[in-house]
Amino acid sequence: MPDGFHVTTAAYRRFVDENNLQPRILAALETANPAQPETLQAASRTIRALFDQAQIPPDVAGAVA
Picture 1 (cartoon, one colour):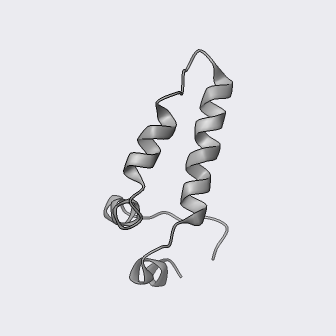
Picture 2 (cartoon, rainbow, N blue to C red; picture 1 turned 60 degrees about the vertical axis):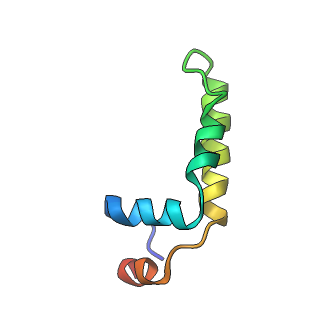
């Protein structure tokens, strides 16, 4: 994989849908409070971990590669 890349909104949504991430993303954001940066950092770490553990659909991964 390259160091970075862009994907379409459709590819992002498919990734989120196929990995059932939306409810877990929203749950991570429930405790986030902009007045308390540490809560934003915690939510960000949680969401990043969800993304790291999820599987990219093969055709999306192929298009990125």
